[in-house]
Length: 610
Ligand SMILES: Cc1ncc(COP(=O)(O)O)c(C=O)c1O
Image 1 (tube, rainbow, N blue to C red):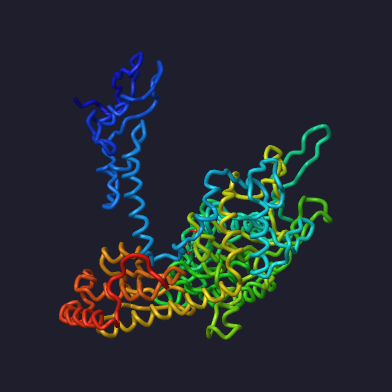
Image 2: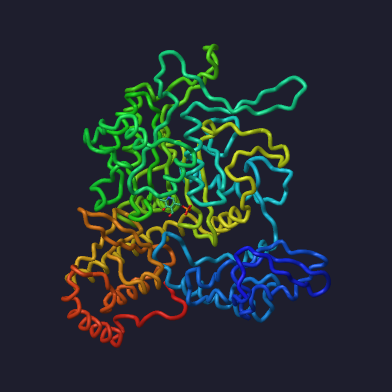
């Protein structure tokens, strides 16, 4: 019996009166582990005299959603009555095997996947921890982990050379919080902070006689003699920047140099007068380069806008997403300072009213935000490793040692490794947006992005940091650096042996190595992240692997072995595929011989060791 989508099907509940549920295209869509038509799964529902206000499927989700072969969707669908014990055990077992197997081979993202928390912390899965409100104000919401959060923040403040502890009365001391999302939230918050600071916004607490204090969001007014653009920040970030920055400027209504340039100054692109404005600041060497921002080009672009009085907002990568590149933060900081000084944007007065000359605060006319999603987590240890002679080199300084750095973010699930996204945001107390004081309900100022915040994340970070000394972290960072070097060498050797350009590259001190995208099967097996890069008009499909703590040399070898198979690069037309076809069987024979002689490990099964 077919019915129009959304039509109502009379339904008689088990116990009492007829109930009505919304039906869609037909009554017999198999649903759930028992393939029971969805409408019939209501038979056990204890609706007393009620009408379940729910909709039936308008199509078959099994047909509509992508298939994960290891976890058939039918097994995990949730009928209105839930799953029985046996069905649950089967579904959870399938999911667990899938997750465990993908964890075993995980190599393609900058996320640490071998975690070790459950023995100590599973207790807290049955506890509610919510760090709602400011970390430094203990809230009436006592089920929180703010004490641990403050310990974690102090740890990072020290690691990143900020003044600590946080002191609300000391503008030079740090302020920060543990993020409920990852660096995407840190970037969003950093840019929000920057936007309000540079555009002269402030929150004022107004005490009106006999009334509760209220919060007024005010905008500094332009004074005579100030540039018409004095409170219009313009954002700069490189072409290698994470997409969360593009999203953040959109959400926050911040204009990028591209948006302002192409609308207000369409023919004046200073990097090529008459040519279109680039959408982002070019990286050194363009798409085929290291991935670090081109400081000279950034300087030209910044100068164009600073000379017109626009405040400058720069977001820098410290470990860019695909190439793992480090922007040269010290050089950018110096350049920003010089250009802004030249145009009176170094230190400036932001007046709170139109009339009173004495009512102003001093602010810089620029803001530098560091997106250290991965790099801020381990580069300090790599710098220590370099100073101890354990590695040759380390990425540049990026932290609060540089007075020009205003804010910084890092993801907790990347270098440290946590079972879900989290992170840290940090700035100086004097740069903080003035908090709303209207959050009496929670007993703490509402200074963070989210209302409710994940208190378990602070516990995880605290646990990890308590159990890993600086020495341990330094050794780990040096090992990962060495492992990235090993992967790079192995892939270069493969490339040379095959006589085919696999575009193998590693940016300086990056924990990632990028190369030509192999077959879908290999991409899936190792969870390799893919990206198309346009080089000289050619669209190149790349993948990368990340040398995180869980990666082993054995897994790198296994990947390289898989890439020697004849079907490893099905899309490699024009890269010597025909020649390859002749080479690969010979390599496979070599591998077999090497396995027999013990030089190469057979494909890995079971738990790996380092
Ligand atoms: C450079 C960079 N910034 C920001 C992010 C976003 O971080 P998250 O996934 O923690 O939100 C990533 C994620 O890969 C990244 O690589």
